[in-house]
Length: 150
Image (cartoon, rainbow, N blue to C red; front, side, top):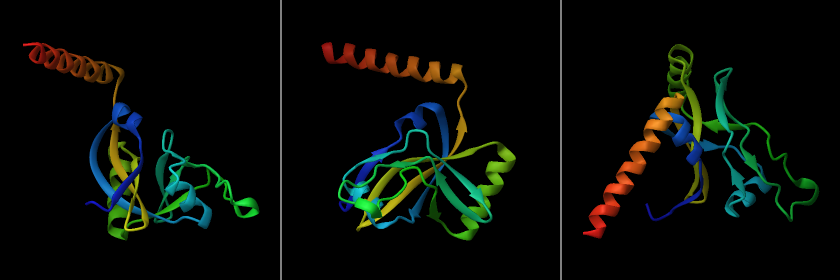
């Protein structure tokens, strides 16, 4: 996969959610949006995906306006349609409704000139889960430090 260029990752999502399953989705963009994405001016921090009328949309994904875009620039926080198969959308919709899960964009990347979003089917972590993950990470770091010292 040498032609894959990761533009941005949502590291906060990995801290706040248990990621059950991952999906790759295409994204419908306007002309200046893809230029801003190629320049790396994207933020996935508070974004999520929602299913409405058999379509899946990503909400609150911030793509900064393109500097040379003049009057043809886009709204940075507009809803953007994601491209998935109908069966995948139905399956995700059922899981989101029944199991209390949410769809979160994990990363945005470019493959062969096309922007793709990696969606995660996620379950929210409780505060004690987050603390346990931090403690585990710190313990692992301490063990590696001790082993390196020997």
